[in-house]
Length: 142
Image (tube, rainbow, N blue to C red; front, top):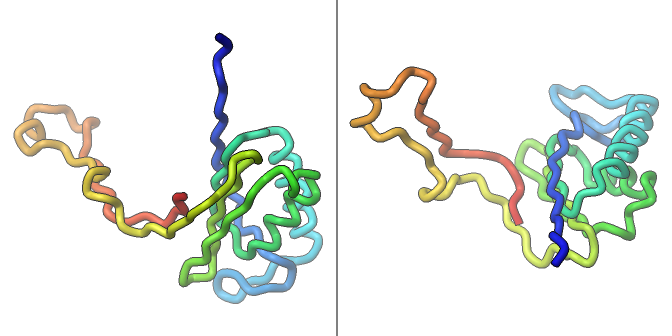
């Protein structure tokens, strides 16, 4: 039986915002910069050809939609976006026939995912074996 492949990717959009709309500290993206980012993002989307793609640093859902349209992939993916209080959006794309049926914004790391080094091992292990204490995050899960 042939192996089945399921490809997942993540992509930082480097503050993809619609032209002349505010971002950090009132900065605005120039139309030429926006158009370049859309073309670059579209090319990456075509190359990655993933089943599920997570996106960070998206300021407006319409910009991501335009990138998918430019790539000729808008009808091939189901998109979901979530806006946080700072105005930055994270997003998820699922390649059809997959579909996003429910999405939820998570800020608190569930207890079962918090990684901590056992105090007894702390004195016995070298420094490069460190504690990982993540209590908050700002990514989109579905």
